Amino acid sequence: MSATQTAAPPRAQDGRGRFIPLLALGTFALGVDAYVMAGLLPHVSEDLSISTSSAGQMVTVFTLCYALGGPVFATLLAKRSAKVVLGVALVVFTLGNALTALAPTLPVLLVARAVAGVGAGVYSPIAAATAAGLTTPERRGRALATVMGGLSIGTVIGVPVGMLLASHIGWRGTLWLITALGVVALIGIVRLPKIEVSPPPPLGRRVRALASGRVAGIVSVSLLGGIASLGLYTYLAEFLLDAAHTHQTVWAMWAWGAGGIIGSLLIGRVVDRTRRPFAAVTWILVLIVASQFVLPTAAHTAAVLAVVPLVIWGAAGWAVQVPQQHQLIAAQPEQATVAVSLNSSAVYLGSGIGSALGGLVLGLGAAPGALPYYTGALTVVALVLHLTVVRGAVRRAESAATTP
Image: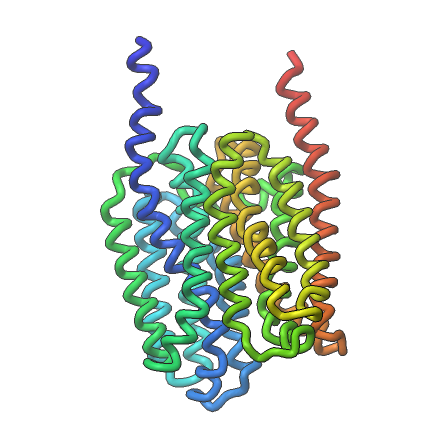
């Protein structure tokens, strides 16, 4: 094969990289939908005449169906192309949001959120794996960061803007706008070229992938990170009331989300430049621990001082998944979709567990102002796991690769 022929695939991949923002449009819709519901709980409970805690179950249902239902239903599409899977996932996601907007009772609402969660659970990991396949290995970090950036931008815009819109057009109007956003994302997916990436893996392959100590360690770190992050974010309002004595929470959500945008968009360049995703995860986890431990003292001293640790926590919390995905793809290069799917499921399963555990801890009498200490301690456990289990697996893999 000539030198010209050898160089062709990278150039083709670079040209196809222009389609990555279309994938990010879909994750943007997911980010808005996943986090805006937390801000709509009072409106939903009032409209349906149910308690806020009952309305809060729609958040739990969405995250659990994202983590568990998505992989199961993706198995049914295992023989379809990535483009078809992405399209079907967005159709399910959009229908789930339309049904949410129409829900007359709590049972219908929960079913609707389950449907939307399944669609999101199928879409997100395939979008990440597809983005990685659309570009060269040297630019993979930026491709993953763009897709993750869609989630973080959707979050920072979705929560405060959703709360603002709900006060004018109602929570159902807000859901109709999210439904329209899903339709726009679906139109974008239709424009994608034929993409040669591995199809959604069967459930059995996902489970077997965990037999790899390296994969299991990385996924476990993501699980603990999800628990710690959503365990605190879900109860951010209660924390601020106890620690900073303020009922105003939108500014805190803006700070956390703005940090998320910064972190998720910059981390790709950092990983591509250093090519050391393991070291990136290490320092990111250190930043999360530091920001969460500092947050109570800062908020108690003055609410405005909480902005700094909130921005750092948001930036680090959103940034960590890019090098995590990078590590998983490196660990399972022939099963990239399997690895990324496991990581995505772990994050959202952790989110559901974190929300439940946060409520349990507060229900047992813990002060909301001390919640960051609990989540920070859990992040320390994730850091220790990363520095022991994952590092050991990486070193064994490197040793095996250099051994004749």
